[in-house]
Image 1 (cartoon, protein in one colour):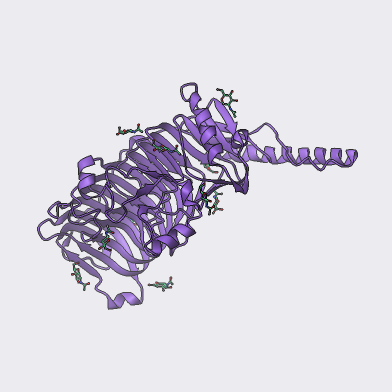
Image 2 (image 1 turned 90 degrees about the vertical axis):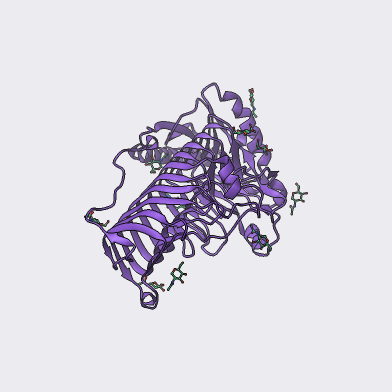
Length: 480
Ligand SMILES: *[C@@H]1O[C@H](CO)[C@@H](O)[C@H](O)[C@H]1NC(C)=O
Ligand SMILES: *[C@@H]1O[C@H](CO)[C@@H](O)[C@H](O)[C@H]1NC(C)=O
Ligand SMILES: *[C@@H]1O[C@H](CO)[C@@H](O)[C@H](O)[C@H]1NC(C)=O
Ligand SMILES: *[C@@H]1O[C@H](CO)[C@@H](O)[C@H](O)[C@H]1NC(C)=O
Ligand SMILES: *[C@@H]1O[C@H](CO)[C@@H](O)[C@H](O)[C@H]1NC(C)=O
Ligand SMILES: *[C@@H]1O[C@H](CO)[C@@H](O)[C@H](O)[C@H]1NC(C)=O
Ligand SMILES: *[C@@H]1O[C@H](CO)[C@@H](O)[C@H](O)[C@H]1NC(C)=O
Ligand SMILES: *[C@@H]1O[C@H](CO)[C@@H](O)[C@H](O)[C@H]1NC(C)=O
Ligand SMILES: *[C@@H]1O[C@H](CO)[C@@H](O)[C@H](O)[C@H]1NC(C)=O
Ligand SMILES: *[C@@H]1O[C@H](CO)[C@@H](O)[C@H](O)[C@H]1NC(C)=O
């Protein structure tokens, strides 16, 4: 951090001197109106899983940052060109300050996309700039969406070592026309994500702002070794399905220092849908989410499910702040999902204005088609929550399992909830077909959570993804 701010100060100082020099020079020669492009070889430091030997600017490939010119070809040819360095130290593509309109493009391996401060990648609002691609094997084709799905704005498949970072540049999905058309029921294909990486090992998304995605913002699926850090995600709270980050059938994932305002779940942890997800059988596991701030009035801070047919296990969640959000760490599944949700650990949440603090339900009804097995029930067990302070709560707990398959192993300890004025009218805790224990919970939990003497557990070991060291890399600083 100090490295960054130090070099930034130097750069500011340097560019000041350049402006002064250029200014006095142009004054002397009288009519130098073309001195608008200032380029200087200064560097911006950033941290990444890997640094790159080769570097190029989007403008080297014909990019025009006027907010009107379509840059799809510039991105595609830049990345095609830079992919030749994958085995020679990798390459970095710098997006300079400006507004870069583009349709979808694909990333490559051993590659960094670096968004300069002031760089905005603007997603095209023309659907023909978003090709249709094959459905996800673990989701099948939603019976009502016969055309399949749109490719995400930034897409990658079967890659290794991909970094999307910057000093807080922006990727703006300009989703308004997509949200409207969806609300009017006019789609026959799933709306595109802003960023999707499939089957990728070593993925970093950091220090950028993502906004207004047509659908979910960040979707790593069938990935391993994923770090999402220092990301701001902003979408209007009333628009449909603009989830923040959805780790899906991924192993070893670390999400930290993120700020999300969204019309759907801030984070939703998934692993496939009904018979398709059961068949693929890839869980999301060894996931840590920490230092998340969430605002989502109609959805969850973190949802586990509802698509969880490949299983969710070893999920650790800590230091969470949610403001005016419907629920905290919500568990949702449905008959037909199969799979499991187990070994979930949550601690240190501060919740201000929340409808449901503990919300677990097995009746989330969507299905891809009629081919699901209604007897495929999820196994829910070993779910731990501790050290929670919640203010202005409407419903402390609503936990519902299945009569023929109770959800077991709940543990809730050291929780203080103060109730809203509306709360008095509601049943404080409503538990059905669940088993578990509790300690020091106010208001007093349902009888199915029997009192015990010890607090709930949280693992003491570290996940492999927590011990990964970032390297200090540098990108060329560009002044246009
Ligand atoms: C993101 O920025 C923060 C502060 O500006 C810095 O401390 C952190 O190292 C950066 N993270 C990455 C992955 O670049
Ligand atoms: C693409 O790569 C080649 C090297 O194979 C290089 O000579 C060429 O200049 C690059 N193209 C652009 C537009 O930079
Ligand atoms: C991106 O990659 C996918 C999968 O390989 C492919 O189907 C798609 O055509 C590619 N898109 C572009 C714009 O090249
Ligand atoms: C959308 O893109 C297609 C294909 O490039 C083009 O024919 C069409 O005119 C564009 N539509 C709009 C509204 O710009
Ligand atoms: C990517 O990897 C998956 C899983 O190994 C494989 O099924 C798929 O064919 C690969 N796709 C491409 C475009 O190589
Ligand atoms: C990044 O930009 C967003 C949007 O302008 C802003 O809300 C956020 O505070 C910025 N983050 C940092 C670390 O500067
Ligand atoms: C598909 O449409 C039918 C009829 O409108 C509806 O009942 C069903 O729930 C829809 N399926 C999904 C998966 O949205
Ligand atoms: C209970 O939770 C509060 C709030 O997170 C925390 O400050 C306190 O240390 C916890 N108490 C125990 C005994 O763990
Ligand atoms: C408490 O929550 C209610 C909604 O249940 C909201 O209308 C009210 O503004 C909240 N009060 C405070 C003090 O945040
Ligand atoms: C309690 O939960 C059960 C099962 O979900 C539901 O049928 C019942 O209506 C709930 N009771 C109240 C008072 O909300």
